[in-house]
Image 1 (cartoon, rainbow, N blue to C red):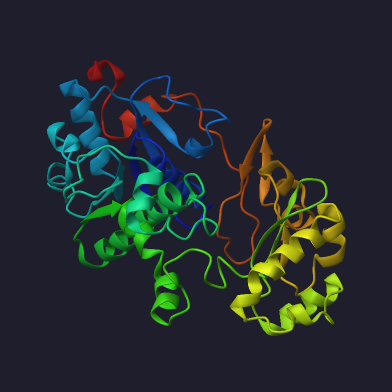
Image 2 (tube, rainbow, N blue to C red):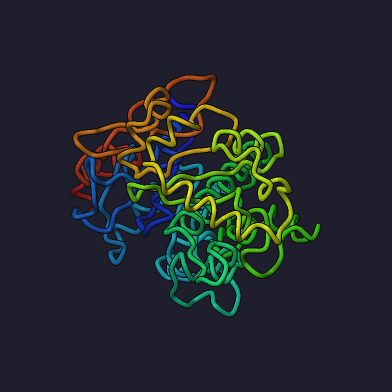
Length: 366
């Protein structure tokens, strides 16, 4: 039984970050009921973002199905929806409609641009929201194009996880006061909020506007290097004591070129030198040199490789469920091993039970 086992969520089917938020809450034990659009909605082991959920298929163009959706939503603690602003209101399933039935309801809305603003009704995707927020600017090398990682900064971190925090915050207040809330989780908001550490560095003069001018995006001691076998390693010994160990492991601790770690004028030449050094050995040979030390090192692994790495394997971070790779629930509580993810049963398999909970039958639904 998960830590959120007394939390009931109704998720109206959407794309990307909404389903991820529902999955994350289900991973932590919440009862997540997915209101699917079609029996073809992905289910089974391959639908990683729908794991742990139960589901019912409702056609929200039909009045009886909308009425059923209202009854199902009214018994929930919170709603997840990710449609464009105004769509749920036109269906009669907006915040005012549902909170009239359950004043304690927390209505979680997830969009790219937010519920209000000049771009609120425009289409977009992760890369657009991250770009406009400012979070994409430093994701790249000096002289190159910004390259934010797909889905992680926007859809998942700036969107799904901020919505989860918003929902849980709203539920805490609702349980204290009886008053629900509407959560406007915009990916552009969340992505901008995540730049807090960078903005702090910038305010202190440590993060220039131009890429390649700071310790985090220009220093030779913080970055990724290609190895002899074409694979990559990451290094990040920011602190002088870790940098000294890093140089020692490379056999460069007596090299005058590396003496002054923070002399920016030396960084390009030092990077070129390290590129040559790391290109002399394969990735796993460098693992033998560095791994487990304080030199701040890690190989750059594919997800399939990450699952087999001894550290990740010891923590059982990845699980093979019917031939599909899943990442285990996070975070952990009291050191317990997270349960294996449970694939969603065929879409709509729990429909009769879900309808019975609100006093309806499939025949009444029509």
